[in-house]
Image (cartoon, rainbow, N blue to C red):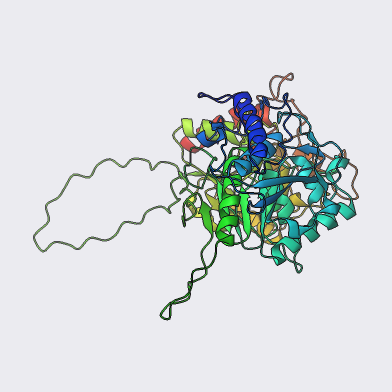
Length: 587
């Protein structure tokens, strides 16, 4: 899904008109004896420019443009739901805050804003809007005063992650021990009091890392949240918010999976007391749903009849419908691999058969190519370019990874303005070598997870892999070689072949090979080790960078050694794909 928000909405009402209208109506409501909590939106803020943001262009619901009137969806202060919005003092996402707040206020809620301190809170660069002044410090919050708590997104929300256990490269995102403890206590107390706990976008990770009786409140819950990157971990790479959420046991829906798949404006999920929204586009609806759920909870229970039967526990509700079901994950477009078909014997007819001329046999098309990417940190260009070349040659391509969960590329690895996310067709454990003509390991540091016998562990634990995944990758390499099929790799993917073991030896032993220049850091090893070292350490013959053909480019640095094909890096990706296709079509 495209994740950008235009500078203004199409339609009749601009943001400035909408918010100015709301400010004017607040004065009217106060004069009429109704509560309209201060909006924190100054005249300058009445026209925020949310350019370069995270979500698609969206038109606000028409209700946002209405001038509020006494008696129209507004309750007195004593009746109005009271929601606590939590923002980070540094790098909250302004659109998350502004649109969720408007959804709450237009639905008749009171809103109080809290942060780590009451000092000015500053939005994340690119999220539009200006700074805001929180009403309360989190340490001063009394949960008894509120009906719900909602955590806004932006990378600053990382400071509220109680059970994170790692350190962010940006110090402001780590939060103090006391702040994380206060956050965790508030979440626990709201839940214990039967109140709603909510998060939007990256703010959902604050719920994921909370611990209530030692367990994340999102454990086993259906949720949505930000599908992009989280802040960088010190000394490591960029995790994704999805990874942080799912690693705490949540069941996170795919982007845009709720309601209309063309937009995330309706991507809000209610699962018991937990209410989550996908991203800034979902903010306004999240505010509405929070108020709807609070009012439903506060409504008097109907008197039971003598013959009444207890209602079953409701299933999680995906707003905005009453009881929808999460949209199923689309079936992979790749055709599932099939073994070479075996002819089924046909019963011989009783009549004397008439000889039929036999057609000249034609060569069977090559079996599909299996591309192996990492669920985290594959190099997008080394995936997309060879795949395009193989498909252009008429070959089928299937993609496998550790799991069939969404796979995320290295930042800026050739995906351009898109997310670069890939949904693998199969988990590696589901693959049968006999169904394929070749195996191709895509580069990117995440491919380290497939190294069967590396010399140590990586500082980035994502790259270490599990024993099961390593063993599966090693088994497949051995099977492809035993079946005299092509075993191929590009850039850092070559290290998977280097550290594989087939009959006790590396497949690269005695072979010429090339690979990328940089490697992730191994614990207790100097950082300068590169793929050439991996090749040499496994008795391979490491070919110097750009030593094939044009010494000024790696575009032609592809080596074919028997049924082994390797390429230096992303510059070699096009020729790499073409070379493999040519060998498969002309065995």
